Image 1 (tube, rainbow, N blue to C red):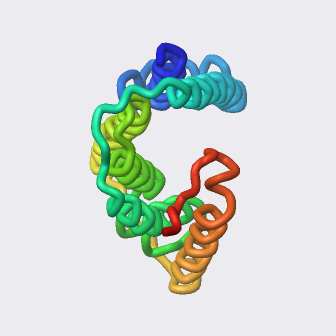
Image 2 (cartoon, helix red, strand yellow):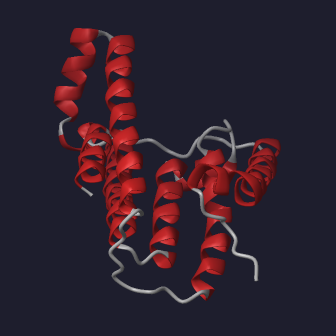
Image 3 (cartoon, helix red, strand yellow):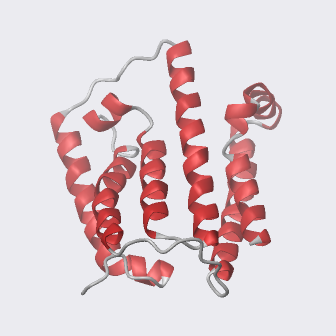
Length: 194
């Protein structure tokens, strides 16, 4: 559990610099240059994420169960992950209406992913892992929206083909991950059969 928490602190801490120390962040970018800052940011983030994932896996070896979620919640997770994956895709497809309307779809995807996984997992390690991501995403989304309002940003124009592409790519990505990749990545099937 300690390794997982350390990894979460490093990863989510690095991703919180803009929230808690934006002036310091700008100073570092000016001092190091944007490519060097991005390199340091990425390296620290990868180390933190690797520690968090490894530590998370270790918590499953000797789990402390806090509660036993009803089996039906697994189906709820499967359904919630459809919009979560679409939101994730919306963060990368330029000109889609989802991003234009909601703003910061990746943070919304993380919120939905973490919330969904909290519903279906009652082990302490799961609660800490997914709970940390949910708490961070809530704070990060609120901070990003405040920055947008302060900068006077408005919704960018969107195009129907980009929105349709976002939906199609999101649904295909959901299918591939849920039916094939989830068990390979996590060791747990995404959708329990039977």
